[in-house]
Length: 211
Image (tube, rainbow, N blue to C red; front, top):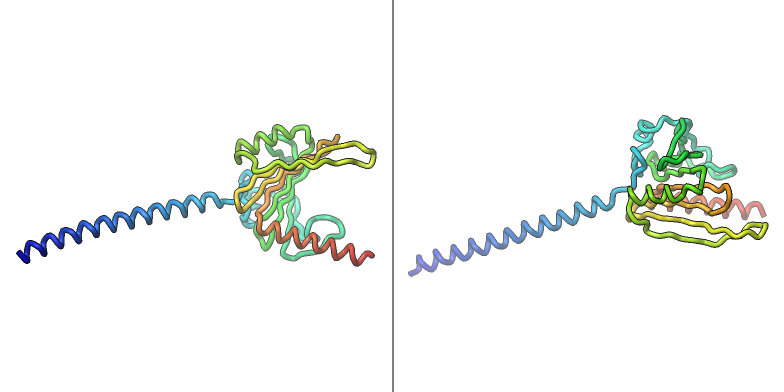
């Protein structure tokens, strides 16, 4: 009788252990799947062969540089110098979404790509660029419209389309004014915000010293 009870006790333990183990394996697999999905969703946006966050050396391998400089923090006259920030311009004629580029600038913070700014010649081609961005990156996260008025009383609208994925942002900005440009910006959010704050603080300090 004791042997029989011991045998059934062993069978019950083994069955419980298998259920517990299978459950744990299932939980582990599901947890791993969630982690993998989060990692996939957290990939920074890419621009052609380049990805935000890549090194300066990786960018140069894909883009023969016309020049690289760190004379100012934002490539604008009179701006501050930041030794951690370098900007580069690729050489040759370039296109984006099959539209001719007027200029392209890549920005690096401590050797990592955190911003790419592309200026296209014709804002009238905006629908083609918006369509191309939508096909590659999906539905825009937002579309902001601001009314504008110039010194002659003419009214315009400033449009900003955004695509976001939690760690990086794409912006397409233009004003529906004659001869205006399309500006497409790819940015790594955390670094871009830090550099943007530096630029704004510098401008505020410079304005105070000019008074």
